[in-house]
Length: 497
Image (cartoon, rainbow, N blue to C red; front, side):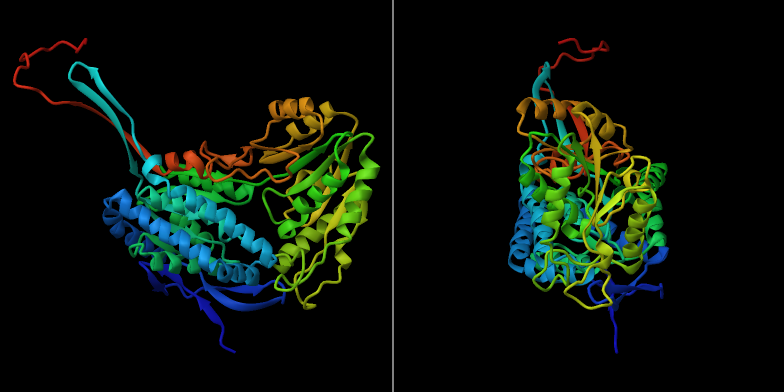
């Protein structure tokens, strides 16, 4: 059987490159490799950067009106064809079709935000700052920029960055995850259909060799990254050493604090939705429910009852949760259930014995609920990135906040309560970058910015929103004086008025 090969996309066309290395791309619901993806060499990355560099003057010099027309066309094509993209995502990542469509919709919101580029790229102007002297600022593109995106959101996460980068006049090299690479190529084809000049958006597939080549290439001006904390730290340090502007979004261990006055039916729905959507492979997934006494027993019962309704299976069927992305990742996530038992926690719902609506060879692991997890256990301290929801019990609000604030991560968190005063205090007290009040996954809208605190973010720039436009531009301030015929001749003193 002939296996489809996923090529790079450079200067608007398929690009094979010199590297002969490839990696398998699996259909997680079937458990079989359905494609091969090319893994770029350093020379292949250099060829893509040169194409992006060649396209830069024409794109950066194009009027904002014409650039905006391309973005609007991309948005309209994405809206019309997003079902195609959802099917690609499901076939390579495993998430159910409805979840894939939701991912695309959230990414499309950033495209729509970037369509406001004429306003977002405006500078400032001060008339007559000194006599006959005007001062104004310009926002200009960085140049060639790099994006390294993870497997869990092969469409949404790249769209956090490239619409803003392109709108600002930059040219882009996208290095997507080699686990689910085809979404990136599909979006490159959509850009070409929208009228984007060749070389403005390029896709280079690969592993660490490709990543290092992008991080160290002297022409690449910035790096945007989303992934695990150890790799985010590596990307930040390597890119910064190479003199690049870097935004590196890392891992998470997101808590949901539940006060005794909360609506437990709402809490149970929210915990299940936030914990097991996309099989828990979300950096914003709720992985720890912090139950304030005396609500623990009732809450665990409510959550486990809701979990019994989840249908696990092939995302192309009528299911709620799909498989995990690879066999190795599935086995790693399942190993945390063993650790929980060894550490004395109570496995209330065990997903290792799930009966999925799908092929036996799929990478299945059902939703798992673990109660009374010791905070010293790896189940609590490490990012699991799978459908394992932990419950930790605390005696008070203050101890719950202290527990959350003591963690290494600070990506997202939520409080569930009907007490407005407690919610308001939580928003102030908590040391986390994105906070939900009775909202379990507080991912900001596109016109705000996404990013956490502590080991969840390296660098000082967050994704999309106005911060995104600041990241992908550099400011120039001009002090200007046009002399009239009556100027007073030489004056070596510093201007005073």
